Length: 461
Image 1 (cartoon, rainbow, N blue to C red):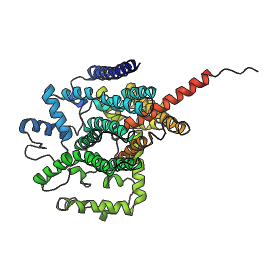
Image 2: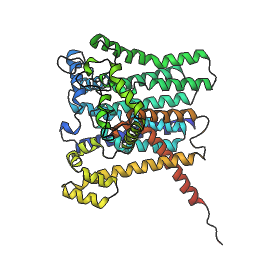
Image 3: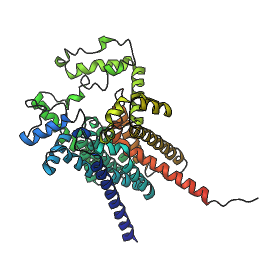
Image 4: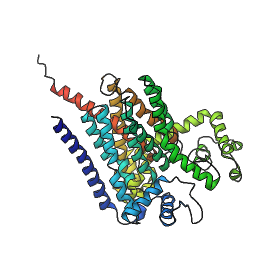
């Protein structure tokens, strides 16, 4: 009987792999016409050049004579690996990303199977395979896809830890490695290891584990970050005379956070709070950050408003730019902004009129409408799953409580560090697997409710 169950499990995993790869490759071969702009954006060259320089010179360079400081080494190394394996062409990167795109559905399946049951696992994997956000960024040369793949592995390893206090040390070491690699790909994961480490400590203390086990687990978790992330910071100290991890951590250069994005919310913005651009290069990191810290404390309501708007943009983002690029509708989507706004306000006929006015093909508007509808369904199923499960022990129970706390904590971490006036829907990709998991719970609950109602015998008077 156990052998039969294992065979079914293996067949399900194999099916997920085959379906994901077949669909992803089919769409790419169908829509890609050899135009590199279909799979690149204005940021792509900042990863491609360091990858080429790594192959030709063995060093990470931003230009012919300037070492890399603006980007981190994770994604350029991945690109260099793709070039080494499949040849120096942009399609080599996409092929390798398509192969890796099967990992998130598998992680969703394993997480749901561990926390709930196999039915929820199948629905979660199906939602991940069909998720438009994953479809879009699989075909884009940006860090978002690879970062989200590694975070998916981290989530699965975290669930293994938070459902078994007697986890093996190699599991927590692998979790630390995945978090360190994710940080090398995108700096937004720089601080994630610390709340995760705190959660592991609380979890072990709750189960009254020994101090030795607690300390060893903490060392295993932090070791990879110390070696990999710390090693890159040592390299920056040698090359640039600073332990700063990346130039993006300089808040003045990371314009997604502050001044120009606040201007739209506060007309009489106090200019003395802003650092002078001419002198910013002569200031220390602490001096550059200080004005923005003052901004947070002097205008907390403004900050909360900007973050709230950013969170809504992040969670409810409408058009996936990579999909519009791949389908060849990018220019039309950009031009037809009024039509998109009309769709967002559910003024469908007005959107059709505007699309005709701008000579936009109906396929591009249909794409926008489909994406908006899929977002609405996703959050509806999440609401059903979370609210109904409060009264039914489907997902919330003592054994899995810390695992759910871990998943929700990861969502709040990325919302905290990504929700701003310049938030994009791609910032949602790292925790999209969590949203799809809870949506899968809602789908299964609705199916069970309809099945139970249908199976009840009719009462005749």
